[in-house]
Length: 582
Image (cartoon, rainbow, N blue to C red; front, side):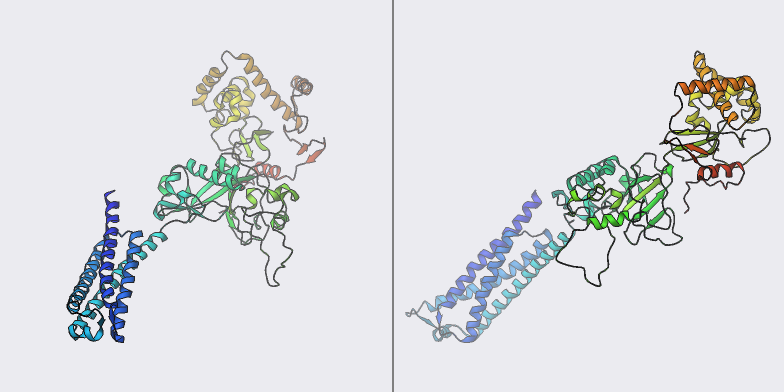
C-alpha cells in the first residue's frame, strides 16, 4: 500500500510542477503580449513561450492520469528542477522589465520604449533561459517516452484472452500454453489446474459451453497429455514438475478399434502415407491427423470405438457436407481443394438436413491427435485341454471376458515326451483369473494330483507339479474346498466333461462308460439350455463357427486358427500378433 501511495505521490508532484510552471509562464506571456510593435525575431521568441506553456499544460494532463515507476521518478524530479529553475529566471526577468516600464507615466508599452530598459544582453539572457527550459522539457519528455516503452513491454508480456475469460490475463511466466487437440492453442494460469482433475474441469467447461465434440472423452479422462515437443508423456507422477509457467502441453484423445488399421494409408482420409513409416506414429500430410498406435495392454480401460476408417469416402463426405454452401462466388480456377477438417466451432449447414455423423461429428473426425489401441470383439483364449495353460491370446488386456477354446495338444511346459515350442503361455498362472473357479492355480494343481492321476502323469508328473510344491498344492486345495464338497464335485465334473467332450470331438476313443456319461451330460445341458443357442464357442474343433443364422462358417483360414497351427507346428516366431514395429 505504501509503495502504491508513493507512486501516486510522484505523479502528483509532477502535476503540481506543471501547474506552478504554467502560472509563471502565463505571467511572462501576458507581459510580452502587452508590448506593441514588436520585431519579427522577438515575436518568434514570444511564440515559443506560448508553445512552451502549451507543452507544460499537456504534461500536466498526462501525469494526472498516469503514474511513474520508482526508477523513473528520480530522473523526472531532476528534469523538473531544471525546468522550474529556468522558468523562474524567465519570470524574474519579466517582472524586472515590467517594474521598470511601469515607473514611467505612459501606459502604452511599445517596443521602442522597451528597448530603453532591455539591452541586447538581457534579450540574449531571455533566449538562453527559454532554450534551457525547452531542453529540460525535452529531457522530461524522454522520461515519458521511456515510461511508455516500459508499459508497452509490460503489455507484451501479458497473455491474450484466447477464451475471453477475465482470468486469462497475467504474466506469461504464470501461464501454460495449451493445445487441446481440437482448436487453436490458448493460455491458462497454471494455478487454475495444479492437478489433472482441475485440468479436466476447465476443459469440460470449455467443451460444454462451446458445444464441441469430445466432451465425453474429456469428462472420462480418455486422453493423454504430452509436453509441447511431444517427447514426454505427462501423468499424475510428473504433473507438477512438468506443467508450470512458460511451458506448453498438448492433448491427444484415446480411442480403440476392433478392426484393423491400414498401415500405408491415413485411417481418416485414406490418403497414402510414406513408405517405411512407423506403425506406432504417423502424421497425415493431407488432413493433419497425428496418429499413435499402442498395444492393447498400454491402456488399461475401455474407450469408445473410432467412427472413422470404414470407408475411404467417409471423411470426404463429411468435409463436403460440412462446407457452407455459397451461391454467389465460385472457386478460383487455380485454387486447390483442401481436406483439412473444418473448425468444429464454426457454424455448420442446417444439421436437420445432414446425417447424425455430419451434423454432430465424433471427435476422431475433427481432432488433431489420436491414440488408438486395437481390441477384438471376442477375447478368444486357446488353452491346452488338460493343463489349461495358454496356447494363444487374442489380446493381453482383460477388458473383454475370456471365451475359452480348448485344444487337444501337448503343452510345451507339461508333457512326458520332451517336446517344446514357443507359445503365449509363459506367464505367472498364479495370477491367471481363469483358475479362480478351481480355487486358484495351486488348488487346480492339487485337484489333478489328487483326483486325476492319469492326467497328472500325461502332464509329465513333476514337470506339472514339482515334488517340493506338492504339499503347498494339497494345502491350497484343502483350504478352498474343505466343507464345500458339493461345490468341488461340480467343478471336477465340469472339468471331466470338458476334457471328454473335446476328446470325443477329435475322435479319441473313450471308455464306454465315459462315452455314455458324456452323451447323457450333453443331452442334459441342451435341455437346460446351458449352451449358447447362437454361437457354438466350445472347442471350435472343426474350424467352423455357428452364426446367428444357424449356418456354419469356415474358419480354417482365419488368422487366429492359422496362428494356432503355426504354434503347434513349431513355426511361430514368438512375436505376439498385436505387437507393433518401431
